[in-house]
Image (cartoon, rainbow, N blue to C red; front, side, top):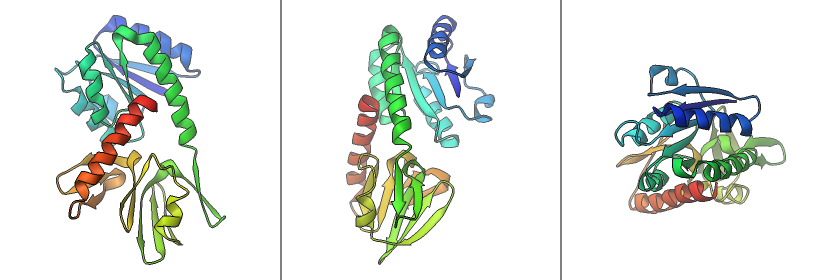
Length: 228
């Protein structure tokens, strides 16, 4: 496992480093005082990023990293309470308050382990094909044929979206319209006219679909931070 800590507070970074070594076995931890090009050359399993490192612009920096490495678990660190609660708007996994390090880190560890179990959920197609739900980017359909777009493959099957949806984790998948299901895990950004998904997949908004999507997505983000 690879963990990165980005914080210019050397003393806190050292304390966090030691605590993480106690929580995770066989872990490799790298510490940075700023975001450098090196962070874009290797993927971390978990990345801790200080909110105040770039004069409140760390949220933007975090989003840039996740655009390159969407499967990295991003955790914001903050010494200022109200910045922590803004993090639910970002594609972050959790937050750790410097003033409450040990309880927050313990809670993060529980959430992270639970998320690893959730990522092992399987979608079984016709008793023949097993697909990890976390790898599904989106699903679209035409008549009775559904195409499942995943991180590594594309599957075309005879099935309705309604039938597929009953097998999916309802907290992570969203019925965008009558012919599309989106996996919230793979949402990178939301633009004015479309949704940006991993692997350069875009889903266009139609009619009044944006408000409904944003409401569901923000609720997903809120629950992701508070409940895992």
